[in-house]
Length: 235
Image (cartoon, rainbow, N blue to C red; front, side, top):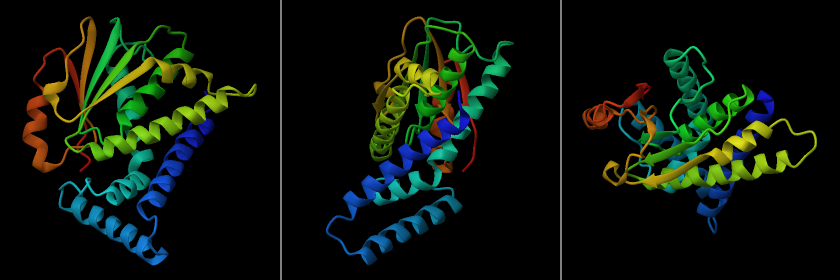
């Protein structure tokens, strides 16, 4: 799989989605108002993160600016964490799971970076000769504004990968297959998530570890002893 082609597809998906959303939010507003909204949202994000509190993700402009600033970084972070976990679990670091299916419960899912990272890991596994990899992601976030934006980025990413795969010179055939093997659902609370039979289960809170949520996230992470918990406190 061509790393540069993957990065290009991800970058296009994020930038095109952000541009579309910015135009929608600022429709009918002057250029100066649009710039003020963007700059004000960026300042709100910086101030919130410095105090380890969540930005106002329910504000569409805040969500868009946040995705523009951090989505690619978060995708790389989740992908790297998954690869580290696979190395620690088994000698064959390309094996996603030895169970019929992998279910990932992603707490504080944001713009679905975990879903993207898992898809890249599945593509790697396919390139190593593994077949029939079934992955399901339950993305939970109390504020679905970010998840909805992530869904739009995901759909643009699928479109870009499909377009590339239709070209004879495509280097993303494994990624194209991986995209069809990863299913997902959005949830507003963890109570609506059902564990799937015959599945290995991971619980992740990899990029939503704000201090105000620490106690609840730690409780949820260790609720199920079958789970491999993946956390990284980057806030």
